[in-house]
Amino acid sequence: MSETFQFNLKKVEGSARLGEITMPRGTIRTPAFMPVGTVGTVKAMYLDQVRDSGADIILGNTYHLMLRPGPERVARLGGLHELIRWPHPILTDSGGFQVMSLSSLRKLDEQGVTFKSHVDGSTHHMSPERSIEIQGLLDSDIQMQLDECVALPAEPKDIERAMEMSLRWAERCRVAFGEQPGKAMFGIVQGGDVQALRVRSAEGLKQLDLKGYAVGGLAVGEPQPVMLDMLDITLPVLPTEKPRYLMGVGTPDDILKSVARGIDMFDCVMPTRSGRHGLAFTRRGKVNIRNARHAEDSRPLDEESTCPAARDYSRAYLHHLVRSNEALGGMLLSWNNLHYYQELMQGIRKSIAEGRFRDFYAETLENWAQGDIPPR
Image (tube, rainbow, N blue to C red; front, side, top):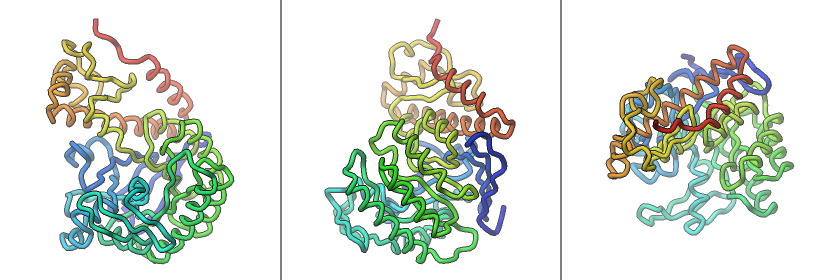
C-alpha cells in the first residue's frame, strides 16, 4: 500500500498495458474490471465473494447514493467503506450518466443539473462542486468529475456543447477536489462519435494534469466499431503515465479489444444483470441457461472453473432455479459471471507480463467462437 496515489506502468505489449495503482486502501492491478456496486451493493453478491473472485476495487454511484441513504448519513456512519464492509478502494461515478437518462425529469445549465428523484419525485440540484462534495462525504478513493453525457446517435452541435460544458465542469471539479493525499480525481473525455471533439476534449483535460482520465459517452447506443474508433483517436492524446478508464464497458469482447488499444480500467453492470436474467459468461462464450436443452443436463457450466457456482452446480439445477424465478439462480449466475470477468482480467495481465498478449487475444476469441459444448 502507498500513502499517495501512484500509477506504475510495468510493461507494454503493442498498446496493451500492464500496470498497478497503489493507494492507501490497497493495490489495483491493471487492466482491472470494477464490479458495479451502485447503491453500496454488488447485486446478488456478498462482497466477500466479490473480493474472492479477484476484484481489487468496486464502483459506487453518486446519484443513487445521494438519494438514499444520503451522503451526510453515510458520512455519519463512517463512510461508504465502513457502511458496506469493503475496506478496499472504491471509485464513485459522478452521476452524470444517470442524470442523462432522466432527460424528462431534469434541467441542465452552466451551474449544474436540477432534477427530480426517480424514487420520490423530490427536487435536487447537483453542481460540479456538489458532486465532488458528495463523493468526499462518501469517502471514495477515486472520484469522477461531473460531466454531461449524450446518448448516441446525436447531432454534432449537441455533442460539442456537452463536451465543452464537461470541460468547464472538469476545471471546477478540480478546484473543488483540491489536494487530497492518497485520493484521485479523474476527468472524463467526451465528444460522442466526432473525432475532432474527442481530441479537443482529451487535450483540454490533459492541461488540468489530473491523476487519471476516463473515456465516457461510449457504449451508449453506438456499434462496437465506432467505440473502438473513438478509442483509437482518443488514447494517443492522453498521457501514457496516467491510468485510462473506459466507463460502462462492457462485454468480454469489448474489454479484450479495448485492452488491446490501451485501456486500463473497466466497469459494467453486465455480469450481474445478465446473471439475474439467466445468461452465463464462460470461457466458451455465452450460455443461456433458460434454454430447454439444459433441463436435464447434469454437467456444470465449467468443470475446470475454480468458481463453485460454475463447477459445483448442474446446469439442470441452474435451469430449474432460473425458470422458477428463484433468487438463488440469479445469485449463482452472477457469481459465475463476475468470477469469469476477473479470470479474463487475470489472463490478460498474465499474458502481457509474459509477452504473449497477442496469442492470448487470438486464443480467447477462438474459444468464444467455438461456443458452448452441447450435451451428449
